[in-house]
Image (cartoon, rainbow, N blue to C red; front, side):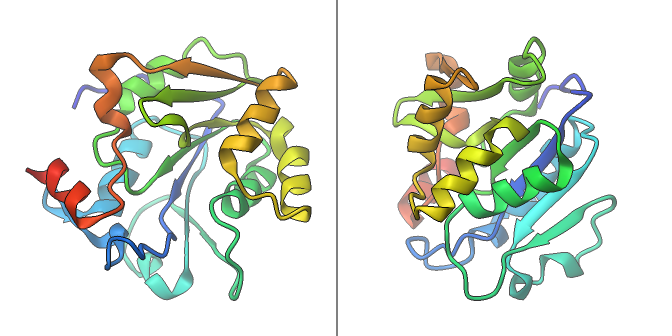
Length: 201
C-alpha cells in the first residue's frame, strides 16, 4: 500500500456497526492481513492523519475494548436501526468539519486513492464516487452542509443514502466522480461469504 498524503482539515469515520445479516457473522471481525478487518480499515484512515478519528459501532460489539490509540467511539443508540445515515449525521454534528467516511466491508480501499481524490476538493464540497454498482455512499466525503438534508431524511424516514447524495448534487453541495476501471476494485463490497471469498482468494 502506498503512503497517502495527509488531508488536513478533515476528520474520518469508520462505519463498523452493521448487522452483517447476509454475511452470517460480524464483518468487522473477519480476518484481514493478520488482524480483524475493522482494525485494518482504521489503519488506512489513520494514514490520512485526520483531525479526529471516529469508529461508529454498536457498544455490544466490544470494539472499544481493543487498544486503538486516538480513536473516538460513537455508539449506535440502543433500539435504533436507521442504517448508515444515523452515524454519519451524528459524526458530522460532532466534528463540524468535512468527514471522510469508509465502510468496514471495503477491504480493498486504498488510502492513497482517497487522499489524492480529495486533495483539490474545496472544504465545503462533498465528494462521492460512481462505481460499477452505482453511486457508492459509504466511501466518500460528507460535509456539515449536508446535515440539514440528513436530518430531514431521518425525520421523513427516507433512509436511502444514494437519494440523499442525489439531492446534495442537485443543490450544488456534492460532486460525484466516476471510478476508472483500474480503481473499481477499491469499491468492492463484501456483504456475503461468496463476495468475501472472492476478495481473499
